[in-house]
Amino acid sequence: MKYIYQFLIILSVTFAGEILHYFLPIPVPASIYGLLIMLLLLSAHVVKLCHIEKTSDFLIEIMPLMFIPGGVGLVTAWSDLKSIILPVSVITVLVTVIVMAVTGKTTELIMWFDKRKGKVHERDND
Image 1 (cartoon, rainbow, N blue to C red):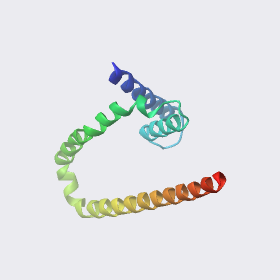
Image 2: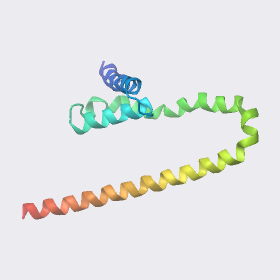
Image 3: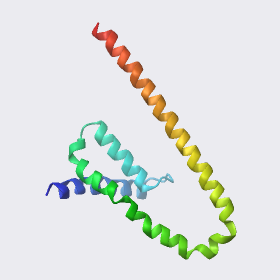
Image 4: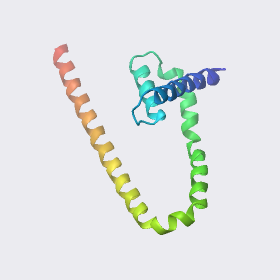
Protein backbone atom coordinates (compact mmCIF):
# COMPACT_ATOMS: atom_id res chain seq x y z
CA MET A 1 0.00 0.00 0.00
CA LYS A 2 2.93 2.30 0.77
CA TYR A 3 4.19 2.00 -2.81
CA ILE A 4 0.78 2.90 -4.22
CA TYR A 5 0.62 5.98 -1.97
CA GLN A 6 4.12 7.06 -3.03
CA PHE A 7 3.33 6.43 -6.70
CA LEU A 8 0.13 8.50 -6.40
CA ILE A 9 2.13 11.43 -5.01
CA ILE A 10 4.57 11.25 -7.92
CA LEU A 11 1.72 10.81 -10.39
CA SER A 12 -0.12 13.82 -8.95
CA VAL A 13 2.92 16.04 -9.27
CA THR A 14 3.44 14.81 -12.83
CA PHE A 15 -0.20 15.58 -13.62
CA ALA A 16 0.18 19.08 -12.16
CA GLY A 17 3.16 19.56 -14.48
CA GLU A 18 1.03 18.48 -17.43
CA ILE A 19 -1.68 20.97 -16.45
CA LEU A 20 0.86 23.80 -16.16
CA HIS A 21 2.28 22.86 -19.56
CA TYR A 22 -1.20 23.00 -21.08
CA PHE A 23 -2.12 26.39 -19.62
CA LEU A 24 1.19 28.30 -19.64
CA PRO A 25 2.33 29.62 -23.03
CA ILE A 26 6.00 28.95 -22.20
CA PRO A 27 7.78 26.31 -24.33
CA VAL A 28 8.86 24.20 -21.35
CA PRO A 29 8.23 20.43 -21.26
CA ALA A 30 5.65 19.20 -18.78
CA SER A 31 8.24 16.96 -17.14
CA ILE A 32 10.33 20.02 -16.21
CA TYR A 33 7.29 21.63 -14.61
CA GLY A 34 6.73 18.42 -12.67
CA LEU A 35 10.34 18.33 -11.51
CA LEU A 36 10.16 21.95 -10.39
CA ILE A 37 6.91 21.33 -8.52
CA MET A 38 8.45 18.30 -6.79
CA LEU A 39 11.54 20.35 -5.89
CA LEU A 40 9.35 23.08 -4.38
CA LEU A 41 7.26 20.56 -2.44
CA LEU A 42 10.38 18.82 -1.09
CA SER A 43 12.08 22.13 -0.26
CA ALA A 44 9.00 23.43 1.55
CA HIS A 45 8.70 20.08 3.42
CA VAL A 46 5.16 19.64 2.12
CA VAL A 47 6.31 16.29 0.76
CA LYS A 48 9.02 14.60 2.76
CA LEU A 49 11.63 12.44 1.08
CA CYS A 50 10.38 9.37 2.95
CA HIS A 51 6.97 9.88 1.27
CA ILE A 52 8.40 9.14 -2.20
CA GLU A 53 11.82 7.56 -1.67
CA LYS A 54 11.10 3.85 -2.19
CA THR A 55 9.01 4.32 -5.33
CA SER A 56 11.46 6.88 -6.72
CA ASP A 57 14.32 4.44 -6.22
CA PHE A 58 12.32 1.75 -8.02
CA LEU A 59 11.54 4.07 -10.95
CA ILE A 60 15.20 5.01 -11.25
CA GLU A 61 16.17 1.33 -11.24
CA ILE A 62 13.86 0.53 -14.17
CA MET A 63 14.73 3.70 -16.11
CA PRO A 64 16.97 1.87 -18.62
CA LEU A 65 13.90 -0.05 -19.79
CA MET A 66 12.31 3.24 -20.78
CA PHE A 67 15.03 3.79 -23.39
CA ILE A 68 14.14 0.65 -25.34
CA PRO A 69 11.28 2.25 -27.34
CA GLY A 70 13.52 5.20 -28.24
CA GLY A 71 16.26 2.84 -29.39
CA VAL A 72 13.81 0.90 -31.51
CA GLY A 73 12.60 4.20 -32.96
CA LEU A 74 16.17 5.06 -33.96
CA VAL A 75 16.58 1.69 -35.65
CA THR A 76 13.39 2.16 -37.65
CA ALA A 77 14.41 5.73 -38.60
CA TRP A 78 17.92 4.67 -39.72
CA SER A 79 17.22 5.38 -43.38
CA ASP A 80 16.42 9.01 -42.50
CA LEU A 81 19.33 9.36 -40.06
CA LYS A 82 21.95 7.79 -42.32
CA SER A 83 22.56 10.98 -44.29
CA ILE A 84 22.98 13.21 -41.20
CA ILE A 85 24.67 10.81 -38.78
CA LEU A 86 27.94 12.78 -38.56
CA PRO A 87 26.39 16.15 -37.61
CA VAL A 88 24.00 14.46 -35.17
CA SER A 89 26.89 12.56 -33.56
CA VAL A 90 29.04 15.70 -33.23
CA ILE A 91 26.14 17.66 -31.74
CA THR A 92 25.36 14.83 -29.32
CA VAL A 93 28.97 14.63 -28.09
CA LEU A 94 29.30 18.42 -27.77
CA VAL A 95 26.04 18.82 -25.90
CA THR A 96 26.93 15.94 -23.58
CA VAL A 97 30.29 17.55 -22.73
CA ILE A 98 28.65 20.95 -22.19
CA VAL A 99 25.96 19.48 -19.92
CA MET A 100 28.59 17.58 -17.92
CA ALA A 101 30.72 20.73 -17.53
CA VAL A 102 27.79 22.92 -16.49
CA THR A 103 26.56 20.28 -14.05
CA GLY A 104 30.02 19.92 -12.53
CA LYS A 105 30.52 23.68 -12.17
CA THR A 106 27.05 24.09 -10.69
CA THR A 107 27.79 21.34 -8.17
CA GLU A 108 31.09 23.01 -7.26
CA LEU A 109 29.31 26.33 -6.78
CA ILE A 110 26.66 24.77 -4.53
CA MET A 111 29.36 23.02 -2.49
CA TRP A 112 31.26 26.31 -2.18
CA PHE A 113 28.10 28.07 -0.94
CA ASP A 114 27.46 25.25 1.54
CA LYS A 115 31.01 25.56 2.91
CA ARG A 116 30.62 29.33 3.27
CA LYS A 117 27.25 28.88 4.92
CA GLY A 118 28.75 26.35 7.32
CA LYS A 119 31.55 28.77 8.26
CA VAL A 120 29.01 31.53 8.88
CA HIS A 121 27.00 29.22 11.15
CA GLU A 122 30.19 28.23 13.01
CA ARG A 123 30.95 31.92 13.72
CA ASP A 124 27.38 32.45 14.92
CA ASN A 125 27.75 29.59 17.40
CA ASP A 126 30.97 30.99 18.90
